[in-house]
Length: 315
Image (cartoon, rainbow, N blue to C red):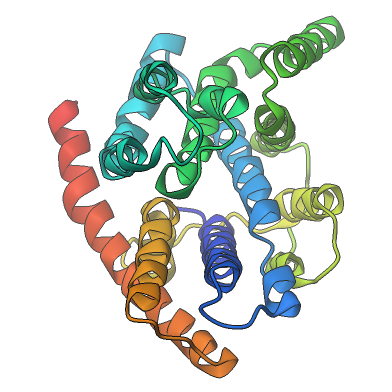
């Protein structure tokens, strides 16, 4: 695995975790909202950089298989976590769909959309869906990126790139896929940066892990952060490390961590509300660190015991 990439995964997934923790639990008044803590962990921007990273990895690696084979392999990779999360979230949707202003007919379309791996399309038409199913929108976009990457590998001329841009603009306006449009661009940027590095277009490689810390600088807009992160992917060292390295272990399980952490944060919030417990800011900070360690440990188990076993079974 790539050392810099694993470090990036850990930092980005950690940023999403703490952003969700301090924004979600303060919203339900478990503790007093602290704007600095919410702003310093820029979860939305971290998700953007996650897709930039995905694009880079698949650009850097030679896909080397047919389009159908590639999409099949990637679907098998993320489907276990996606449908497991869906099974946890759907009962809550069935319990509270009336509160969200939905009817039975809406519910049928929503469930069909989620089962077909199109959560972002569902969210575009039913933005009132919230809670446990919220995290799945990013997995839907991830799958759309997987479908697109083999196409990008063939787009190497100006007129093809312009045509591709036109397709994305059409999709965004016709289907109202705001997040799809925003996330696809970093994914495309990352892909072509990865292709350039694969073909040694960038000759020098610098130790620039420190630039990853820009994710924690308040006030940096998403577009600037994407530019900074692109610089990192252009310049960061891509050296090999042993599979026993702790950085590799945590980095590989970061995908599972990203998917399941929301359930623990929402669950903790519901438990504290039920017990009528409120936290001081210091207690919230300590509690976030403890929960972070617990979720990391469970993510490791989920990735190495459940997901890998199921992936091998499906293959």
